[in-house]
Image 1 (tube, helix red, strand yellow):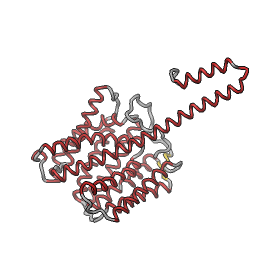
Image 2 (cartoon, one colour):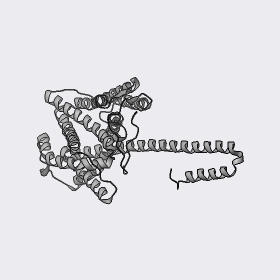
Image 3 (spheres, one colour):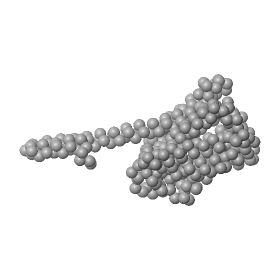
Amino acid sequence: MDSTNPKFIHITSNIWIWMQTLHGGTYQIKSLDFEINNTFNMSSATKGDRKTTIDVASWMFNIVTSVGIILVNKALMATYGFSFATTLTGLHFATTTLLTTILKWLGYIQTSHLPLPDLIRFVLFANFSIVGMNVSLMWNSVGFYQIAKLSMIPVSCFLEVILDNVRYSRDTKLSISLVLLGVAVCTVTDVSVNAKGFIAAVVAVWSTALQQYYVHYLQRKYSLGSFNLLGHTAPVQAASLLLAGPFVDYWLTNKRVDAYNYGLISILFIILSCSIAVGTNLSQFICIGRFTAVSFQVLGHMKTILVLALGFIFFGKEGLNLQVILGMIIAIAGMIWYGNASSKPGGKERLSSSIPTPKTQEYNVLPVSSQTDQEI
């Protein structure tokens, strides 16, 4: 304990007083024992409150930035016709790279190490996820696209069970099922599938699940903070997506990004999208690092509900009906149940740790939770 800590000074001063009045030794020793226990209990409670506060703030940060960027991109693409999603994502990571470089130069991010094979593997998963989702949306109906997105949760569960030896309680499994049901009710309408669309959806789902699993895995294995991991991955993703993005977008839309009619308003929307994307990328890494990919997917469907609700508010109430409202209620009930069930003992347990936990770095923007045996 730090000798300059007021609590430490308070305890040591009491020890001195009690030593001076040794004739009443039994009473003083009991008082000292009570006061020390009380001090440490208060410290534990404060630490628990701080973790809860950071957890809630992390989720709110992710929800606000994710919903914000969806609404901005929807306006950019629907209103101003900027349909180059892959190139735009490359610009997002370029902006994130710029920020992490500035913070590293200023000394706010310490130098860290991520082996090249792990970096390449992560970037491949992430880029296949981005391109796969865009292709899946183009080749499939909206209903099947939504079903594919929902299937990420069972796939993420499968990865945790196989790779991390995680076990889920019955209530946790049922709560996940309820979330899937609710989101399906309010988002899945027409469902049609074809062979190439199905293949694109499979690639998109598995690459996304693996990318999100790797966010958690790499942070735990190499004790990387959220900004540290972004500092490694964002430059490579930016370079690869900006090189391949224009070609992928031309393939998907039959339009050239360099031929787009850039106006002041559309440029401002692109800048706004890139600015919000920095927060979206960071908050994703924070949330998955502190929790798991499964929790990120389950509670992340709150963003789907909010996007639907805000879409009805800002873009008209067409499509808002009893079925959508019922689906929203079911999904929210499932999320609340999941949060309660997974936090209970045995709700979600890692039976044995397959990831080594080396010494934590001195700097961590928002440290990864040290809870290894049971995770939310």
